[in-house]
Image 1 (cartoon, helix red, strand yellow):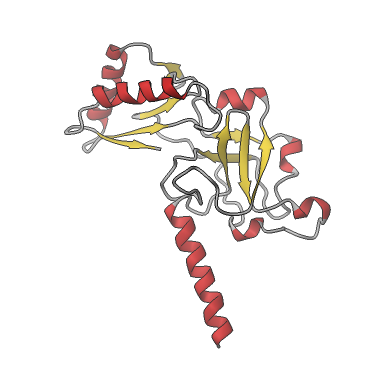
Image 2: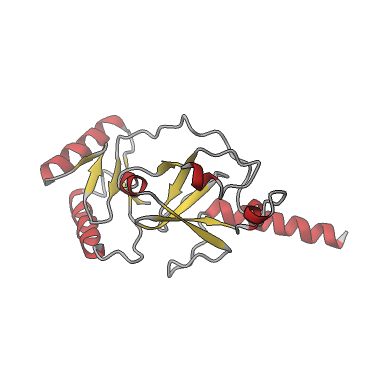
Length: 210
């Protein structure tokens, strides 16, 4: 009975942890076992204004049997929302993502390693397309993107905000940030953040930094 209670507590604690977001401390360190996967040049550039990638054949080897994943959700280290049971990578540097668990299954095909402690079996999310209205991405070098295009001027940013306020009763601006680790352009990222804060009226638009 005592062992059952301990097991239930561990499961409950694990669910609470994942529901709250990524296992990353205030200094940006991942607090659970993890390993990294290199990205291709195209994948690294694609993440500038998206947060999903299509895995290559080589990258799929890192995903254990039973987790049939072609499209991988990618979260930034800053992401503080629910991961909602999805299998995901953490964008830790421009051409690198991190997965939770270990790579035991690469040497033992009958094992899932510890990856099953952190991910549920894959949910088919390949057809999911986020609503682009009010969704901004800041690239590695601080460039601001909206609907895949570079936002060049304050006037263009104001048009985005007007579109958002016209589309939503309680408008929310989502801003996805790039990884800070080894990013020599982080001061430019901070300048873009400051610019957005100066233009987005908090009384009219709620801004969530993702």
